[in-house]
Each structure stands twice: as C-alpha cells, then as structure tokens.
Image (cartoon, rainbow, N blue to C red; front, side, top):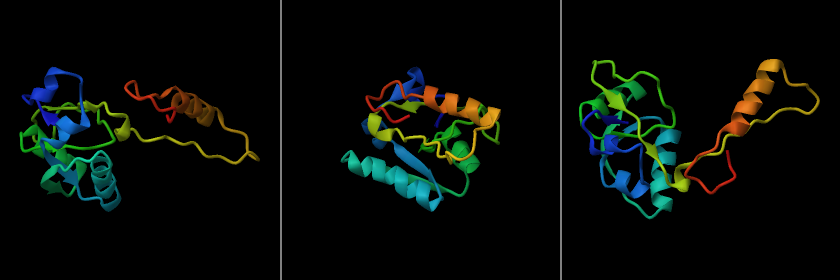
Length: 135
C-alpha cells in the first residue's frame, strides 16, 4: 500500500528488492509481521521498518500520508484511508512473496454449491508473475 504520489504507482507492480529499499509499515499482528519479515530474510533483504501500526487501517493511513509502504496480503476495495487520503495497492511480483491457498475438506462430505464455487475460484487464482504451481 502506498500513497497516491508514490513512485510505485507509475507501474502495477514492484520487486521485493525495490520494496525493501523503502521504509516499511507493518501491522502489529505477530504471525503476519514475522511472516512478512521472513519473506525478506529468505531473499537476503533487510528492510527498514519505519512504523508499526496497530491495525490495517492505521497502516493504510500511514501509507496514504507518505510515511512508508504498507505490507498486506489483503487488498481492500476502498481507494482511500479513513482520513480520506488516497491509498493505492501495488503488487509485489517476486514468486517468493506468493502464498499458497489451500482448500481442505473431508471426502466424506459433499461440497455445498457455495463451496464448489469457492473451489473453482481458488483453482483459478494464479499469481501471474510466479513460476510456482501453488495457487
């Protein structure tokens, strides 16, 4: 997540190395924070953590106000933060940043129509920049 005037908004995507060169804003969710940092570590990158935000909306507001680049696996539809500033999403294109989506179910129970649709959607999700078969 970046503010409307951030250079990353000129493109639709950025590399993990380019992101690591920016001040980073992380939400204070232990597993999420540790996981995000592990992605950089595995790539041999050391990002600078500029801010820790208590909530995703605080992170989005900090990013919208140009105080760093917020990291999130979710992509809220709202194009503004709670304070009314524009916030943009930029995809990290490195395959290392992709997470698999798993659908686990019991073979003893038939999928409901809604679950069948979800299964189709999950199968259709593929990260365009990835060489991985994980989806």
